[in-house]
Amino acid sequence: MCPYNIKFSEALAPGSPYAAREALGGEDARALARELLGMTQEEFSRAFKGSPMKRAKLRGLKRNAAVVLGNVGSAEDAMLLERVREEEPDEMLRAHAVWALAQLSRALSPATTGASEEFETSPATTSCRLETGTRSP
Image (cartoon, rainbow, N blue to C red; front, side, top):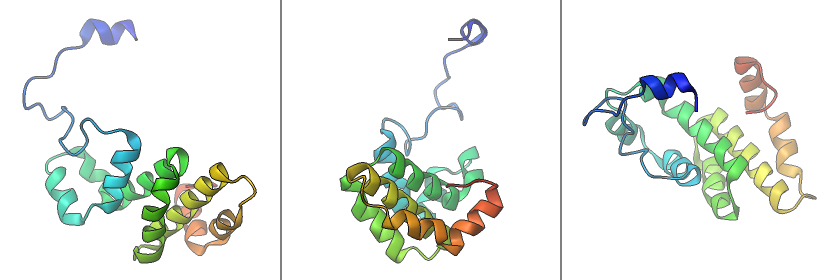
């Protein structure tokens, strides 16, 4: 740990705005990602009222949650990602669900690449790349 941080660190006061929100506390990355992907706008607004997390917007958090599941998810997460791919009205989020499914598929069966090809040619993916300047989600 950085000596500067140790020297100047302080315990958070009860009720501090910097303390972990109940919606985030005590969950591993996969569980939190699954929860965020299923979260409604109303639940998001209630959970993060007055929090800087609202700047990320639910759309951004759901996108990041799909990426998390693509990176550390398991076969258990495929059904949720498939539901996002089929039911999510936002094209960018659907494209990230396709990417995550491709990652999971590759991890579980290295010979499977169809979903990855679908992601690479998706118009939403091209749009995401233009918005962020990146090659992948």
